[in-house]
Image 1 (spheres, chains in turn brown, orange):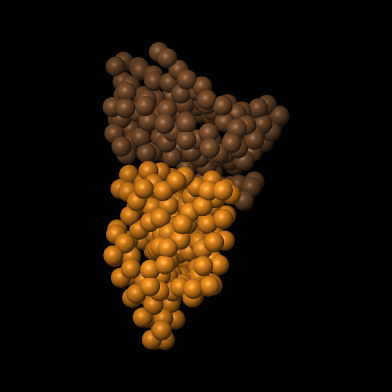
Image 2 (image 1 turned 60 degrees about the vertical axis):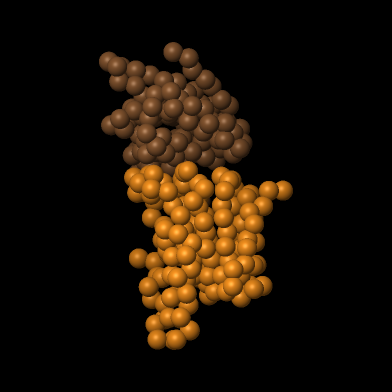
Length: 134
Length: 133
């Protein structure tokens, strides 16, 4: 299965990321609502990387398990990492001027969500959105 | 420098957002809009987001900010033309657009602003309906 990695350095990079996700959505036949959820989650994570880590990258690929197709996005950065992961996953928690919806909001929008982070070790967020949205 | 145009429509201002907002563009829009309201004495702002296929928490915050600022400048704000998939996504994201009125079309948005304006000028209601929470 082919995958594609795009660096995240400035806000405009999201345009390229979005169009690639749209291509993958078209390939899997994901409907508009699920596509919108996935792209919105991606937008939250791209903004998070730019706000906290300044730069990072995202790998985008189609995954399938037992004929079930979905899109997997892996966001990686080498930023300061997250000290309190539990707090960061709560609504309204933010160490910047944001609304604190980025991580918990993105998690609610997709089928599967995993985050790995430690102070000084960067952050890896992996999400999968299955074609049927479940 | 990219700029979002602000058009005057009688006593109201119309802003059509067709590109993704990034920090600087959003800040410019907030500033331009507030100075336009002050210059023209506009009584309402219509923000057309029908061209946006996503609204994330950042953009939601900008819309809320614009509504709060406009209210301080004695102008109402109506967001018009939200796509159904965007509405569904906003709810799951958990974004509450505090103080932001919505309408499906520009015509309905204008009607809403006119109604608010009449209420305000008649002085009977002190615009309690636009308060947060």
